Amino acid sequence: MRSNSAVRYFTPKTFDLIMKILPTLFVVALASRSVAAQYSPLVPVDSAPVTIHAGMLIDGHGRTQRDVLVTVRRGRIERVEENVGARGRGATYELGPATLLPGLIDAHVHPGWYINRQGALHTPRDGDTPAQAALSRAGNLYATLMAGFTTVQSVGGPEDLDLRDAVNRWQIPGPRILTSSTPINDAKLSPDSLRGLVRALKAQGADLIKLFASAGLGAGGAQTLSDEQIGAICGEAKAQGLRTVVHAISAASVRASALAGCTEIEHGIFVTDAELKLMADHGTFFDPQICLVFQNYIDNRDVYTRSGFTDQSFKGLADALPTASAMFKRALATPGLKLIFGTDAVALAHGHNADELFCRVRAGQKPMDAITSATSATAVALGLADHLGAIAPGMDADIIAVRGDPSTDIFALRKVMFVMRGGNVFK
Ligand SMILES: [Zn+2]
Image 1 (cartoon, rainbow, N blue to C red):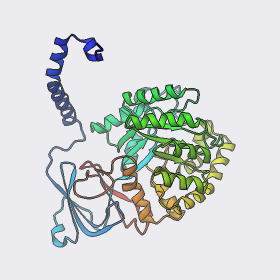
Image 2: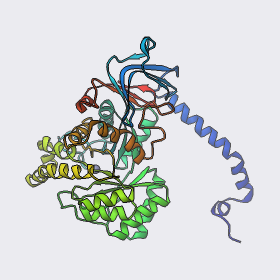
Image 3: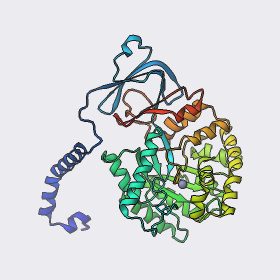
Image 4: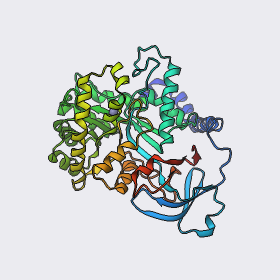
């Protein structure tokens, strides 16, 4: 007779006992979680409903409402009313002529990247203590949240797991984090080993899998993993219920990733119209970066020169700016392409995430479409659309307010005056 592994390790009597106390253990675990939250500094004292009154609301799906009153209870949006007139008086938060929007979502950040005490990019051997590294990273998250980004996807490093959990336990202020933990970037591994790696990352707590299908921009972006290796990673991730986010610079690497059924493709600076159409046909989410990541290195030339960048690197970055904008224009013109929003924010770009939206609008995207991409469209790509990315009854209360109307002037997103995440006000 074959026995399952649990029975092999325990006598039938012990196994029986474990099954009996399992529900109790589960309840104890849940209780200790809420105890942890109860003693965290950022959790509000009571859960009385709060109301927010503002002149305008953008719902995340391209619609606007005027003179709105939003009621929030226990972290959720309970009601959204428009043209409320005198009933708007006495709201908990009176925001005057401001515009409410869903908390913004960035599908590609690196909160682990920060500038160390020597004024260069942090590396594991620069002498920073774990506490110094953790505090710097917490600072990155705080800057991101204050800029109106209430959800980010980090792609990523193992340090993200602790950052994510600290935010979830309300120990530090920050956007909620989905993370890939360590990305997969080893072309020497067999397809079977790569599948094993996907399962190991899942066991470690990764929310998604990040893989490098190509070299970086400086190295020309040629495909590095074989079609078979990409297929093994994206196939196994799908079987394990995880999404895949692929770094792909060249047209060939984008093509291979779309054909392998990977969920989301990053960068894609050298794609032709054929790959754009291929992604549209396969329902692949496309997250092109067209300026912040390049401009941030260029604007902080001293820091990144100390971090090993050369004149050649900076020239490559400057050249990438017009190439990426031209590619984005073609992406906008591709019917059915699922364009989402991610910045690739690295050290010194945290908190400037909206700059990428300004570039997208400059390249020809309508401001309202840019806002939709950074809210509901990216929520869909991240598998969060049932509770995030829109202001509507039943959704999580991730609400920000800006001075002005970003649907006519996208730069209004620079003037974030109010940030609520999960019903808690941080700004
Ligand atoms: Zn990146």
